[in-house]
Length: 337
Image 1 (cartoon, rainbow, N blue to C red):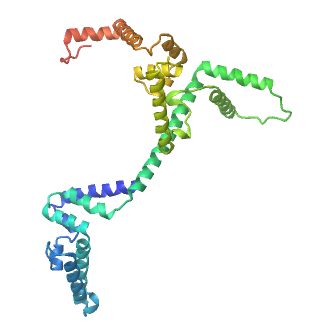
Image 2 (image 1 turned 180 degrees about the vertical axis):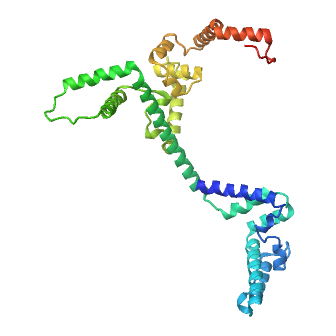
């Protein structure tokens, strides 16, 4: 259904261009065209729905093609009958009538008229649009996660450290396993390489614990499942917050490992995915330095910033950049170097 929405928007845009190029003759395509719907039915804008319906029935009987004889008279009556029917379709509905009145009062607002007209023509259930949108997002989300995971596996396969370790495990399993008495089908070099890579990939997948954004995707991570589990997630968070307040705010109990890591991650302003991607040795160093304590974290942050400034100061490129800025200033453009 999202395709229908985009299609309707493109139609509105194209018709808008046509409107500009046709010197404003957009009335030919909407409502009663260049005719006035009220004048066609012989009513005014103050007329009630009953008066409009009454006039329409009278005019419909008068100009119905079946009550006329002769080819020319029949064609004229048929054209008038179509115009009368169109005018009645516009004015009998309150929403359509309001949109038509708005167009009469504001003829210069082309795009607004296009939107109002096609909004009623392409009626789409908003609930269905939401369902389709969430489904598309979930599919894209799941596929993209698999692509990132596949990229991570291929990266580890390309590193000699992990590739050689995987080869050792493969050779060890083959030496420990029982040999088959049957003849092995001879494979080409390309097939042998493909089989070899598949074995390495399988070993890495089974033994490599990839964390963070490149972790192996799970069905629970997609948007549909997260929305389905939203009440449970909210309830779980409320319990967690209540437990935190009770244990660490009221009872003043010492933090456990998980609580310490949570405070460190919050101080660093990292998401759980970003924090999980940090190496285990680095995380252990954070715990050893007790970075969940505010004073320790501020001291560590200052040291990191000073270290970064020192590295930049020792960087030859940064030195050249500082010399350039000192000699030429930020506002000058030269052709030097």
